[in-house]
Image 1 (cartoon, rainbow, N blue to C red):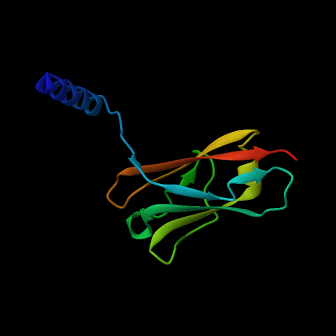
Image 2 (cartoon, rainbow, N blue to C red):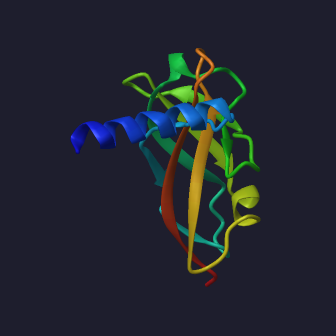
Length: 123
């Protein structure tokens, strides 16, 4: 039975690759602030990641397939940090919650993604 399951999984993986289904490497992210208040005067949203900045291809990072960061840099441990204009973020979120997904490409051409659910308040 175990060999049968392994065989089926291998066939599914080969089929997915042959039809061009891409798999993204999952990374951890931490969004700050994790509560977006639509009427606030906050200027930036910051995302800390678990991927090394040196592994990220320049200019490939994007939030929710819509917003390019205003800046990217390495934190003290060398991990990617991306900052986004809060007005741009407010334009793509709505109450009560929103899933924010950071995507990009590594220097090896592999895609990566990380998601976090944030609260959104309109007051």
